Length: 171
Image (cartoon, rainbow, N blue to C red; front, side, top):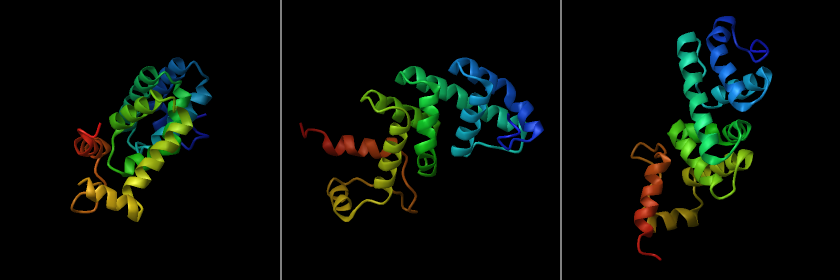
């Protein structure tokens, strides 16, 4: 099953324990767990040719996915669907797994879960990275910066912090 996902034999041996744990946690088949794992690793830019690095990345990803699922009352399949839809946008905008987990949990608190949450995150990151002219004017008026001096997207918590500060006392 790992071979069908394009994983080399040394990588497969490194991934197997964490994928088995993921299958158990998700109460799903190994085949489905491989799909969840490899898809999420690829999306989050965590695949590696070095087996030990890959195993560590898989363990970290599995732990964060399980924590997110438990915190957000989602299944691991929902978390994987969210990562599939929005993870790459989130990652390329300088956000890590913990920020992704917190964001998915916040969305789930508002009944936005699974692929819908991933699409929402993708839209949020897209709109913040390339705001319309009217949105850009509003951000500027509120003194909210979404990019650093080099033009790189700021991590979402920093942007949200600016929103919180700008909106303090607005009611």
